[in-house]
Amino acid sequence: MAGSLAVPMKKSNRLTLYIIIAMVAGAVLGYVVHISASQDFIAEFSKNIKLLTTIFIRLVQMIISPLVFCTLVVGIAKLGDVVSVGRVGGKAMLWFVAASLTSLLLGMVLVNLFQPGVGFEAIQGDAAEAEKLASNTQQFNLQKFVEHIVPRSVVEAMATNEILQLVVFSIFFGVATAAMGEKAKVIVEGLDALTHVILKMVGYVMNFAPLGVFGAIAGVIAAKGLGVFLFYGKYLFCFLIGISLLWLILLTVGYLILGKRLFELLRHILSPLIIAFSTTSSEAVFPKLTEELERFGCKDKIVSFILPLGYSFNLDGSMMYMTFASIALAQATNTELDMGTQLTMLLVLMLTSKGIAGVPRASLVVVTATCAMFKIPPEAIALILPIDHFCDMFRTATNVLGNTLATAVVSKWENELGPAQPPAES
Image 1 (cartoon, helix red, strand yellow):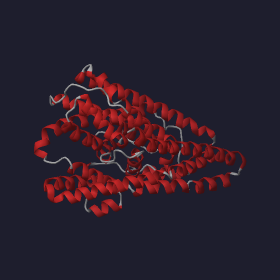
Image 2: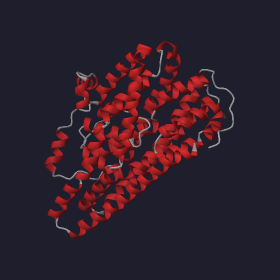
Image 3: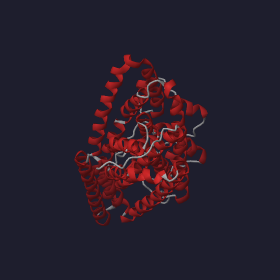
């Protein structure tokens, strides 16, 4: 196990190093331009260097639709007979919905309390352009919300990255596929294979992250100076406060249900938590987590059902980050979001965040789609690239903790939690 995980950990660390180097290099270049060039040159330089960021953003947007469709359909189809698993699935969904809403609400409350994006003008432009952006922000009423949910054409939804509509189609398609049983097995296997191809593409796309970071940092610092890093420090600090509070909530609820066995569970998942934190991929620890949950005492039939379901529907750390990041970017770009719109965003994120677990920095994909939906300038995504990897380390570990607790709690509710064995050797 340790040998098989060495490669992804090494690759992840290498990408982290490249991102840090790109951030420093972009800051140096941007600062040199900021202190030595004319205003006209700075404006032209900032505009052109950000083309690197534009390339990265468009590559991310390119994979949104196929990724959501394939992973969500495969996840639903693998549930099998809905009648036989309805009771267990209902209990799991009760936990998932409660944990997701708690995570989303916590992110929304903290970002409004700390306001890490206020005072930072991320998007260059004059007052007229800012006013135009604000005037184009649509208020989401019931009709608009329904139109964003119900697809008119799945091809159109994919072509325009209407994620909500694609989620609805994927749910119907997945349920129908599961109902077909063996007849649809070839479809499930094909989509499962396609999912792995897309995940491989995600890895390729993330290799362009250092270029996106370099262009973003160089462009912003050339125009704003080194004071821009005050935003990153405040942003990361506030996010870590949120992650700490979320862990406290999850562990408290887990203790109320599992009692002292919670500490035994934490000993079993210590290794998967460290691996997930290091690689920023919850998928990398799926086999290890399955093994440790069974050794903890969860029956294999519960683990094999709840854990894959949780990987699609229970992303606690990522969901807290999504509301936090989306609203922070709205603050940074002076995009007005009233409380009603923020609550609508929360409901949207409940749906658009499904089916993307296991992808490093998958939250960036969802935040990109959410920004476009709520008329937040997509260029603002570049602001969080330099520290997104470090945020991802904490939110991925939180996702693993949330899915572990969900599996153990449902096992307890089903009276299927047996005695534990010692943790497996890594």
